[in-house]
Image 1 (cartoon, rainbow, N blue to C red):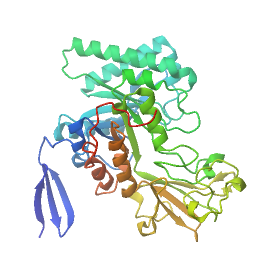
Image 2 (cartoon, one colour; image 1 turned 90 degrees about the horizontal axis):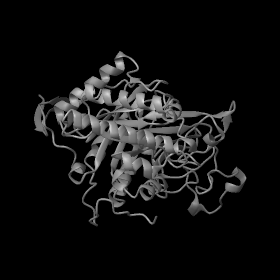
Image 3 (cartoon, rainbow, N blue to C red; image 1 turned 90 degrees about the vertical axis):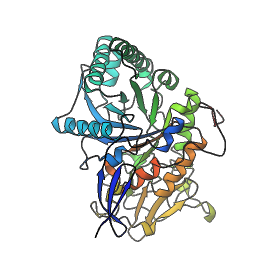
Length: 425
């Protein structure tokens, strides 16, 4: 016999302690606690994943962003296909049902579709086409805003001024549309910017961008991965809060907060997936010199050794490894079994990893403990919230989303002003 409990507009059926059914009873569901101090809980929902977004997931957000809307070389935007449009409409419907104050947005571009940003932004006519195409999309679809997802390839130095020009023109056009249509709520603009690795931020005038957007979402992860390049042999945390030679979350967030002088617009990103390497060498390397020559990086002090910083052997000219999501953690879909009882904690980087010397496999991922550290960091550093990549990748109980959504981003030990800088800039 199932027990039934109603919580926050959701009717839950239990068998023992297991939730066997979750039904939505109607809106409005209260926004996450972070909203009371203007912080954001942002979830990305993609057009290509297997899992369909639920009302329960949407209810834990302040902003839901559908990715990715395709951008064409002439500046027009549109859905990739009918499946994408169907998933977008489903997300919008559920968000409006749950709470009309949840902001529904689209992400334009994204990985594999960012190649047209540079030429379009540099061409005044095409730039105008893109502005009008976005404005028309937002108005006809009755949604709240747009994010410019310029990722892979990232912007370069010659794109700094043209990017700000585009955002300025987009903001001007949207304000004119708001006035013309007597809209009471202004449209939102956000931009996705990269983590600090080498010179990836050279193409972004962060202060100029911040003056035109409502917030900036950070890719504050992907510092290490088994990429098909020399750097891919170095193992390390997917999103180290501190430490490492290739940058970390703290460095990335500090640069954005200090250059914009508006930390309330800077949103930290958390990935709901991990990376793994095969053929990993036995001995660790110095965590602060992970990009130097291997023989120079050897360290003898046992107190400085951490198993997470290693080197993987190349096979056929590249490291072997891959990607695994939270939803795959208890499976062996990719030939890797995530056994959480093997997890270790690296206190320097505030990250979780699994090291299997017998199999020469190392796995690094965002765990409950590492997410809790980042929730605390966002509050302490007075940042604008947390974005999650992506909702599709969470487990069936939405463990990570629940953790982030219920996190305390508002009531820290020290009361802070809206844009009080908590870094030494």
